[in-house]
Amino acid sequence: MPLQDSGTTLAPWWPEALLWLGLGLVLLVAAGLGLLWLVHARLERLAAGLAPLGALAELERSVRAALAERDGADLRRIEHLLIELRDGGRRLEEQLLRLAEARSALAEPGTALVPVAPASVAERIQNRLYALGYERVELVTPAAEVEALAQGAGEVRVEARREGALCKGRVRLRAGRIEAVQLEPAYPIFP
Image (cartoon, rainbow, N blue to C red; front, side, top):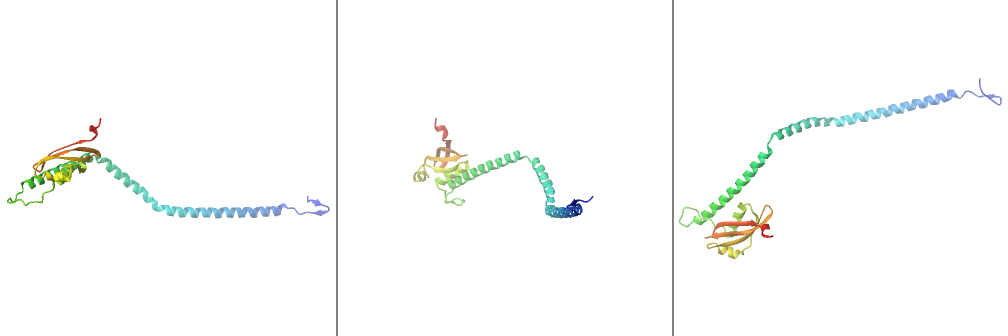
């Protein structure tokens, strides 16, 4: 039964409301489909951008294989071999220095040996201490006194470092040749 208002009849309002509701629903579904299509397109672009990263799996396999090979190496043994090589090099250097000193002492003008310019006493002392593993070698005895010992006998006071510790001592010379090296760490000097 239609509604009446002061003698006039009103048309029912619900068919028009249904039309607007249907139209809103269609627009909402269209907007949702559009948004879904945009999300799908963006996901496809991301997947295409991430495709080159698929090589990471192969990289991971190769890294694991390299680590497995490394575990087989005996690093401790290699370290000991390197230490032996270093010590052998020091011993060889010391022997070469001794031979050079002996050669310069034996070299006379009439011999078959080619005379070499003799190294200064200070250089020979420094070379010997370097060969023994000392670093930052300093001669405490004045240079003039050291060179005066080239043909005589005496002692040269020295300071050097070994493994970071300061060492003090003396080098004994006889006839211009190094006879003995006596260096001790400085820390036992103090109580």
